[in-house]
Length: 343
Image 1: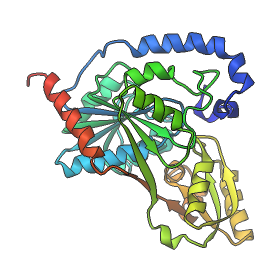
Image 2: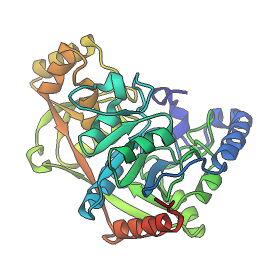
Image 3: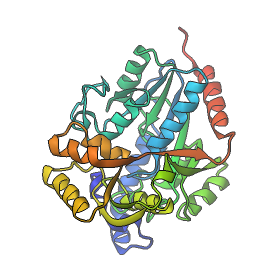
């Protein structure tokens, strides 16, 4: 099931649809759990940190990867980011080049990563990691791949959206869980809660009981003061557009109009023209996310035009515990040294 087709009942507690599909979810969950338990088939000779999530859809993995990348560079590492390249047409291990590739080629997330660090897209995680090592990277940050056992990870940091949590708690197709939660928790090294909300309370309690560290973060909008009081038409094609809209309202933006699209939405010429027309008719500023801006770039004249007219809202994540990043990297490096292959 495609991420942009995730049904609303996945995010509702006690949904009858989830219970109706629970027998199928049970079988799917058992199969997915067995696959996740398989021993890693390969290791690379650099530390690997995986940023994953328990459920399908957005949880804040991209800004979490960038937060880790910033810290890694400050420690002297040459950072490589490994992405599956969701939504991209290229299916071989490829170094992403902003001057050459667009979202049709490599997906929107890979473009954001490539603007941050050396980035490789590869459905084959092992081949992608090996290509990053050939690029001279001394640490690899995986965007997703937590449930994929092919590549050995030295640390699994699992991101949870505080407003969405685990949804209805069922595995696919009855819910958004990739693998039953208790089983995923066995492979988790730490949980990273992004944003504010109480939907993650269950995750926090169960993680604490399992002895898993839980870290919290706040969402910070770059240049937020200049946005306050602006009347805007905000649009977003991400897993949960309301999260973007709520963030804007939280910094004092007046949302006169809002337009949500499916996750990884490919904007048509007509949709771009409509957004521009409505913003001009109502004298509104266009606001969108970094992912949507990446998906618009180089996709056509209309897409480039609406991107040019839009304010691209950039966010960063800030850990509430200042020692969190040091702790993650210390454990990662200790484990890497323990399993390091001889040169």
